[in-house]
Structure formats: structure tokens, C-alpha cells
Length: 80
Image (cartoon, rainbow, N blue to C red; front, side, top):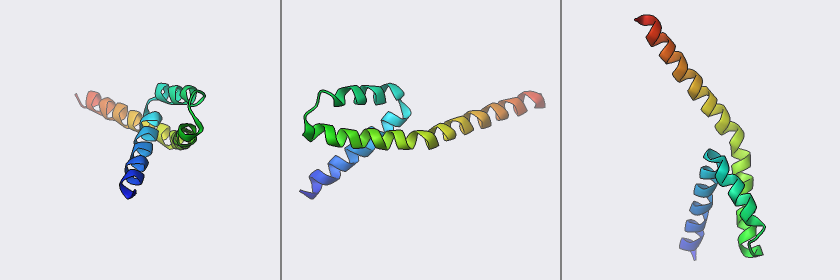
């Protein structure tokens, strides 16, 4: 029983993380929820909520990485 809970939790975390990185996956999950049984729809809704909650911090990190990498390229070009 514990193994099933652990695997189920890991799957939800992985799916939410991937849905955060890939907006098309999040849209697909939302669409699929309509066609699932209650047994599947409830955990799927939890995954969607987790992905949507995590999107704002992930977007900030992505923008920060892009800005720091473009700043590094600018400094490398200026040093030449």
C-alpha cells in the first residue's frame, strides 16, 4: 500500500513539474479532465492546480536565467 502511495505521489509531482515547463501539456491535462472518471479526475485536478500554482515562480526563474545569460553574452562581446 505504501509503495502505491509513494509511486502515485511521485507521478503527480512529476506530471505537475512537466506541466509547469510545458504549457501545452497543461492545456492537454485540462482538456482530458473532462473525459475522466471521478477516480482519475480528482488527482488530475490536483496536478493541474499544483502546476498552475508553480507557474509564476517558474516563469520568474526562466526570465531571470534568460536575462543573466544575455548579460553574460553582452559582456563577452564587449570584452573583445
